Length: 371
Image (cartoon, rainbow, N blue to C red; front, top):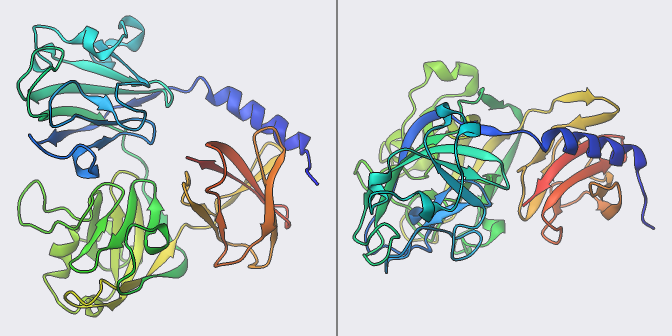
């Protein structure tokens, strides 16, 4: 029998209304994204994943850039000449092609990219464009730009209960159950050999000693030690550099994993590692998000759900493993229910994209986003 939680629905509507006008300006340090000539645009390493709604790339046959998350054009974006500092209210936004001046994306100078659905504004400047004219026709598909990043976030330290993640030998690394989904931007796995990598941003392990590629898992940095040692006292580097080429990964002891973009620090220790081409099995024990309880108006929220946003499943921390739950949509209608099991994981693949509330039978309410 479906329920209607009118108080929750009212609170959600109020929160949704207040956030509808929130604009986000990426004013953090500039980074450079590059797609080389003749590279496969369908691979994550050749895409600039800004959000789940906007992922920029370009075909190797040339043509304009496009948002592969939405199709074959730049749906979900609008562009303007200028910078965020100029004041977005003073800029004129339109399609990307309308802002290409001087017959070249590079000669257009400073641009502002607006991610419409996410309401994010990004400073961007094209620095390379292979062949073609201003509309991007022709050429082998290479391009490069410099763009701003999210403003620096306060560090988040995962000091919650430890869990163990395991990928068995010869298990398919492309399946969600063989990946540790830390956040939407960092999902750790391993193929049948070599090192670990971030399948959310790269398709394979790349441990080459070059400036551009020696960064696996992409979006992370590592250090020996623990969060309790004080991250300011640790020396962070790539995973490969941190383990120092050791074949016995499990002998490395305590490490700290830093998710750079989200500024999250996680205690981690490898407990199993299959050498060579023996199947790619590995396991580690890591910390989880710290459980924090707070009250906002009449709705109690507990930050015990991760990843959030989620694609396939969510894990609930700080709850009884046999607790009953209901999942409500933004109208307060129940769309799913059950009892916690399988390590307190709940399958959410069937839910439509949107905002939901997980209601536990102990009275706790957790807001999460399904992508």
